[in-house]
Image 1 (tube, rainbow, N blue to C red):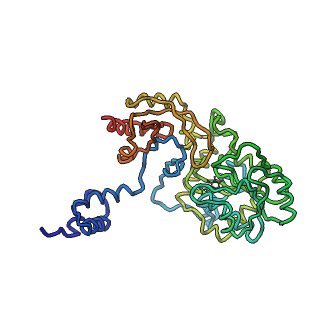
Image 2 (cartoon, rainbow, N blue to C red; image 1 turned 180 degrees about the horizontal axis):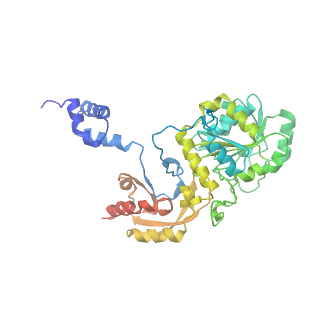
Image 3 (cartoon, rainbow, N blue to C red; image 1 turned 90 degrees about the vertical axis):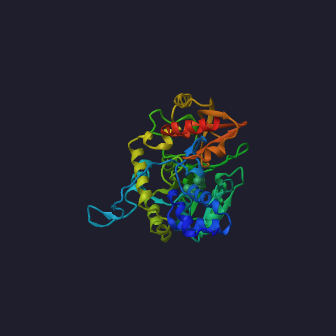
Length: 414
Ligand SMILES: *Cc1c(COP(=O)(O)O)cnc(C)c1O
């Protein structure tokens, strides 16, 4: 039998919906491997590698592998006033929309939105401290997941790292000596997002650092906007504990704070620089700002998030809606699924935020490890295994996905 033509084989796969050139690649690979029958599974593999919605049943609210904060945002195919001042009819600034609203919501004089939290730190250091010293406590020379290491970012920015104190204890006098000796451009405080040092420890608070007479930058990472959580009718949930917040850090005297858009802020992947207008302006004018700027899609999503905060409407922010759903509601949903055993679970914030803190939650468990089968479903369901059982936590599942989840679990048990 003659081998099928590449083009002919590709045409038999057209029902997969993949563009013809991709199907031709798949067909060529299958023929080259001497396994024509594998063409369909190869095409399915390509489809499964596409970016697509998944059901997050892990109980990790900000799951790094699942895009951190969930967000609904759609934009019609249209032009926007991204860089047009509609009143003046002149060139405007893309920093005039979301950034200003975020600043307003956080009690900052000004703000700037960049591509992610790492970019925010890099830009601040490059714009305000290139060629000069930056003082950091040895207890805060952290690595955040994904290769973000404070000493390396510092080196990339062209600033010189001046370490003070020890791993467990850094005192105000340590900073004072460094300020007197090294004439630093900045003092940098980095939030210990993803770890805790416990026991014989000492750190200096924001107000004391701010009084040193050098601009203080606080990399908050997680981006809790206000520790009073005015967007939540019931006030701050217990699990937020003593998480530092943007508004209070600025009120304490920080010149700038930096944080991620898609952690506790619950917005799109972005980084925010907020604080003193002169410092934000210096960052916005630096050439790196152009390389790190987000596009209109991200800025529009960020604007929606900021407006929700200003309306004090936590329910409009999916992260906060999910994080604060009453556990009784989750338990009732678990029972209504009608499959598996209803179990109490512990959800977590994730993305290195609030390490060690658990949010009481509920879900269902079925016997055995079915995570691979659930992942293979459409849509894929991401669950976890505990003590030989597959556990689905409902805190991270949108209620509109409950039917899909029930069906997926049922197909595992029958
Ligand atoms: C998460 C985090 C970052 C990096 O932010 P990305 O948005 O992931 O780039 C930087 N600093 C701290 C303290 C963080 O927690």
